[in-house]
Length: 313
Image (cartoon, rainbow, N blue to C red; front, side, top):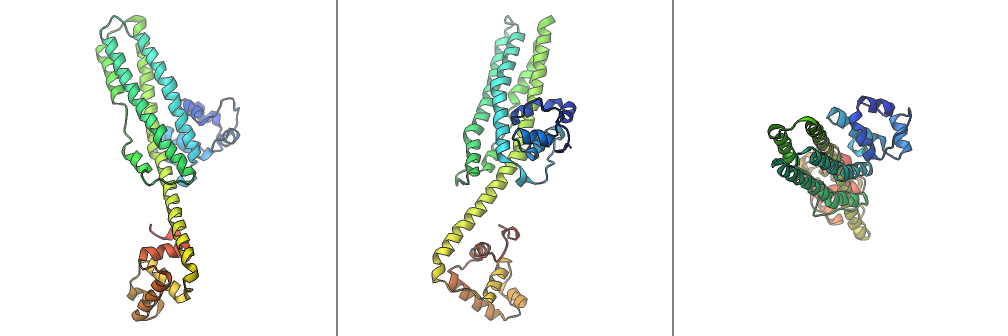
């Protein structure tokens, strides 16, 4: 696993297949013997996120420690640039190579080109959905705006592989398309590029599934918790002038309720009678106009009686 203090040239020399990832992160060549951290800092890229993606691409498993430390703007830049590279460069380039490699007099040539175009169209549709729906949604989250009608789990459930047509195309070329001489060399080179790009697409989808989606899910959770706390805080503040101040014992009872204790357990915990606990809870409900354990939990979080990290949401 590579770390921030490793030299960038070492990382590339040992894993040349990540060269395209550099461009997607916006990292230019010519960085000399600088470390990964130095290169990323000089070129405005979050090194923690860069290494999470690169190490995942190389090793095939998640090896970052904290999803909250991932830079979502950096991930967005990477995914958008990857889409542009694939749609605007790779797909057209391979199409041209395939067209040049096929014998126009072979009746299968037209059908093979049609199959390739169907594959390319499916990739366009897949990526354009992300660009028109998913990425704007994430950008709205970064601006602290939460949508009630969409979340990243919806995208995750509908995120599917797009390589079926490509697999069919490769099999047909290998099994049923006879060639000779120079044309065979051209077709073999094109097949090699098709296999490379299939592998790249698989890695791209896995980065979305294993890094991007968990990062967005964590951001959603954080914003939703903040939104709930803010709404309840405003509600409590609105009614605070008409509320009596809670006694320390009443606060103790609220904390116990938040911890899931029954009235009997609260009585034993605070060394008071069950009837006294019931009286306290009646007074709390009267003062706060909050009757449910869930409502008391939110009140306790907003007013600092308990820490939100210790509460099961």
